[in-house]
Image 1 (cartoon, rainbow, N blue to C red):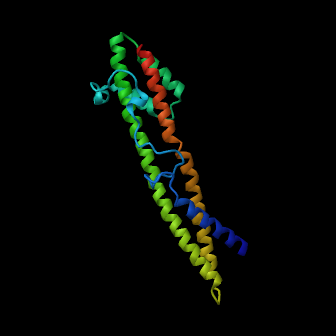
Image 2: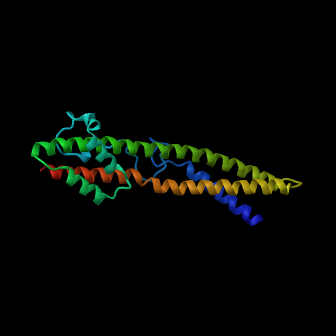
Image 3: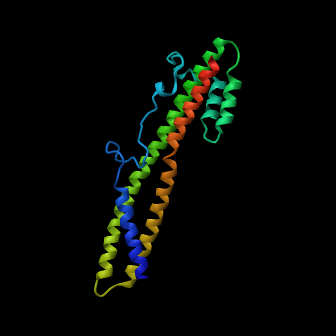
Length: 204
């Protein structure tokens, strides 16, 4: 029992200190080792004609908006998305250019919004993790006091010990999920870049 409590306490203190660190002081709630880039720059993913004249017009085109939804869904394999782009961008050079601009404008808006949603969610979880870490640290101190008390109340020691084990497990599970989700913004960037490059190639 004592070994379990000591081990649990050490883990609790470790996870509490881990939660307090931020990779970039400009973004204290950002939990990922990857640098936080708040927005995708259009120039970084699109070297085609200006999109100023299409803006939100892609939403008014049922075909384009349906295709944007399909291509921006992470469940759609990239090779399938690329095939759909090629099938869509047919016709005269003028039609291809217009449709290509509408399609990429939609992808840029949609994937940028998805990316922001994921990043905001990560920061929300990070704040919850910080609160959880503070609670774990405080309860660990309480447990140490209970262990040192005379007479020692074994019922309280066991109850708080079990509570800390459970809270630490939840903390670790969340941290593992965060590590996985931290890869998503980069995956979105790569998807947008790949589709943008293909769309530009199909215009030529």
